[in-house]
Amino acid sequence: MSLKDFWVRYFGARTTPIDSVRGNLWNPSVGPGVYAGDGAAHQNAVLEQYKMYVEMADRVSARRSLTNTFFLTLNTAIFTVIGALWKERPTESPWLLLFPLVALVVQCGAWFFLVRSYRQLNSAKYTVIGVLEEQLPASPYWKAEWKALGEGKDTAKYWPLTHLEQWVPAVFAATYLAGFITAVTA
Image (cartoon, rainbow, N blue to C red; front, side, top):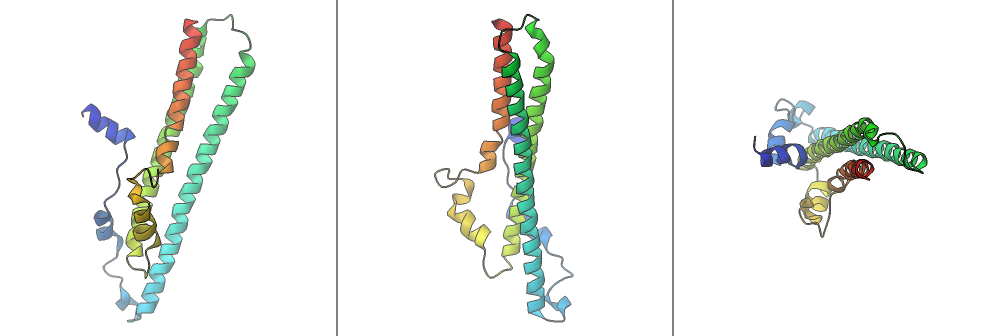
C-alpha cells in the first residue's frame, strides 16, 4: 500500500456513491402491490421509514457531539492538572512524562478515529436518506439543501463540521508532544 493510499484510507474522506445505495435499498418483493394496490399506503410506509431513518441519523450526530464533549472535557481537565502541578519545573526526570504522553496521544488517536467513524456513518446515512427522498414528493436534504451547500465541495458555501472537528484531537496530540519535547530539552 502506497503512502497516498494509506493516507486516503485512514485519514481521507470518501463518500458512498448513491447508485450503490439505490440498488440495495428497496426490497423487490415489497412494492405498492403488497399494499393491495393501495399506493397511498405504500407511500405512507416509505414516509414513516424516512422519518425513522432521519431520526437515527440525528441520533448519530448527537452521539458524535457527546463524544466530542467527553474528550474535550477530558483534555481540558488534563491541561488543568498539568498547569496545577507544573508551577515549578519538577526535579524528577522529564522522561517519566513519556508514559502519560503515550496514554494521551493514544487517547487523542481514539478520539480522532471515533469522530472519523461517526463522519463515515453519517455520510452513508445521508446517502440512504437521499435515495429515500427519491420516493417522496420533495427532496429537502438531498436535492435542495445539499446542492445549495455545493455538496460539501465548495468551502465558501459550506465547510463540513466533521472535517474540522476531526483535527481537534490531532491538535491536542501535537500540543502534548510539543510540551513533552519542551520539558525534555529545557
